[in-house]
Length: 476
Ligand code: C2O
Ligand code: CU
Ligand code: CU
Image (cartoon, rainbow, N blue to C red):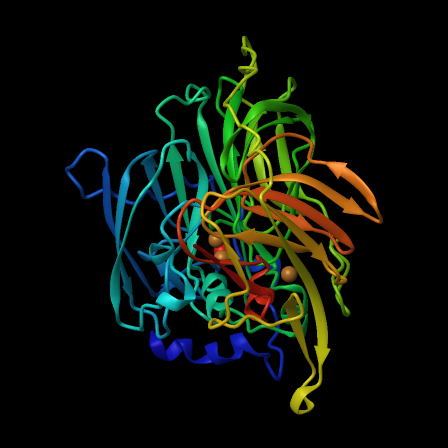
């Protein structure tokens, strides 16, 4: 097994002779959509979730001709198993690193103590293990995920398959009676020999996009919609770099939640859902009156990609079979889902400028992705914040490409965005840990860090994070 992973050195850099990519007909389609594998709680104590996650190479059969693909996975499962807990629970995860590299587990979006959050500083060596332990506060119910965050290897480890799902449930969930569906998008780039492809120049510049956009690790599966005509979907964009603009012709989405859980009120009549990498949403999907089989597609997203590449096209992600779904007697959704207060007066400001620069160091043409003109340095603290103090973060994109901003340890509210001096207020109050910032745009976020320690913030196009677009804030 480890021998087969010999090509991995190419992942961080670029392949010299690009191998041919596998054609889209190499993976079978039309299987019925799988449910996520749940991580089993081995604890007998109420309020405690205890389990083991082992990251290791494993060989999987994605291709229909039987060619195997060596991936890296948590508990040999793609995507990684779903952890489901209640607000207020204590979580204890024993992490076993059987990868040939250091790794960590980062609990993306969750308010966990900084020393339990899988920071690059707390790497678990190859062959090592550690316990992650944290107690979740109340009012953090939402749709999260977990993935590695070791220094220099995050992008590679995620694109080899390491990413899992995390749902925190509320004791009183106003939408609990609606059947729930989990939809995880993760793209994978495969060569015709079935191996995970090396990065090419486009991947390094624009972020890596695999030609196969998988749904719950299946290629173009078919989902059979609930007979009662309504479902609640939790959607994860677990792609390294691919943006999603989801469209399900004939069906209408009602947005009810974002990264950090339910909105105050449902947002009705959405025909399209834009998800930046790492972003999550919760939507209510009502079956169209005339049923049938409808393709869920992602439309091209203009995000300022550089270089020479084939123009993006709409991609079919899965088929939704509404044949047996009868949207009868559906009751109106509650007008109020949850209370989200404004965070109050701002006590401090932070300004983050994203930029790119071309470098020819050592005769090698490469890109640098910078935060406030600097490349990430584990030993440098970029900002200091006071615990429990409301801050306004201004994220300025002075580069040519969109960059999805993410910060650890807290959820924020998008207050407004500005383009060419024109300010647009955030449309509704929501908790998020992802905010896309378009080229030339300024996005203003209000947030509070309520635990001390070091927190990372970065672009969540993982190849950009890897190339330096990350900083750290120390909460004191
Ligand atoms: Cu998904 Cu630093 O995070
Ligand atoms: Cu994170
Ligand atoms: Cu970026």
